Image (cartoon, rainbow, N blue to C red; front, top):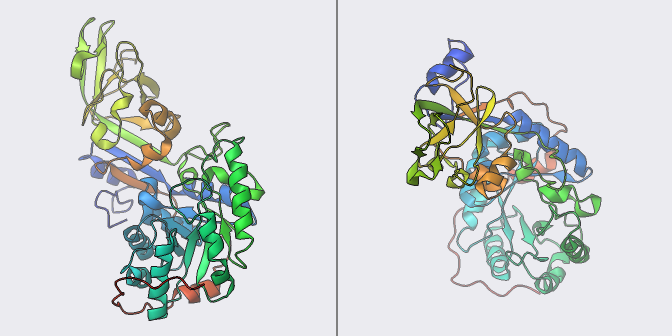
Length: 426
């Protein structure tokens, strides 16, 4: 936590409340991340996927929630495998958790092998050129840290084609291949009855059955809830860990994780017929009292949440009641209509709730015209951040000592890679 100057300390000579109030005085907004809720969500997903291992996707700074803090909490809870997007993300996570396996979804590039080795993480390889380059690095250095193979079963984004995957099966089955996981990614897992799910499942099941002894992974957050056939040996939940609904056709089984508050900086009284905000697109239909709040699109509160004379925008909770956004969201400020609140219910300096107290990340995503993933990953860095929970966690199972030994293998020295790799072995 100390690495982030905007994280509020929770200890000191004063009471926790006094410490927090003093530290927050200079911030316009506060983002609170409930690590216990993340752990509870992970455990629910783990239970749903038994006997498959439940990993955690913590890319994009754990979907905006803080990768180091989330990794520490989940590692203490028993999570043994993490997925990130880039080597730099992996570097930060490895500094926080020395033992778990870390996979890098962005793949492998020539001359990056030593970076993987130095922090003992594993590339997710989705191209034959990547695989050839990885082979070169491993042969020249003796590195045995492992890698995953990504197979495209319908996303048409990353991954080997089914024909390419079929072609490397003799190499895999020959042994000593260093492949620790074979995976694919679902296109429409949130749609329970999508025919694409069954098509991808059949394609993946067919190909992984030929990867002798290699663990397989297909299910993302929503895929976990498609049932046992989709769960294989490992599941890779991401957004569901952070409270996004993985089953949008049903009630959300996940606990909310993020609470976002922002400060009232001023009040305005406007007469009936006056416009509010840029462009004057929202017109007061009665004498109106506005609260001006210190948050805007620079903080990840999207301009799409604005209201106008024909469209109601997002809502904010002020003194326990929902109040609508009035006018356009600007870079640093929004106006809220608080006319219906009791006198003195809100005061300058008070915090209002933008996310939490019943306003879910999925509701906010609806007003933003996007998905919960983008809401979370867009939360700005101007907020003070508070982490609660996650400090004293008993692991569900003891760490696998063989995995720890493997992951403590010393990294080889940096090497020079050849200009072009040799062809893949047959």
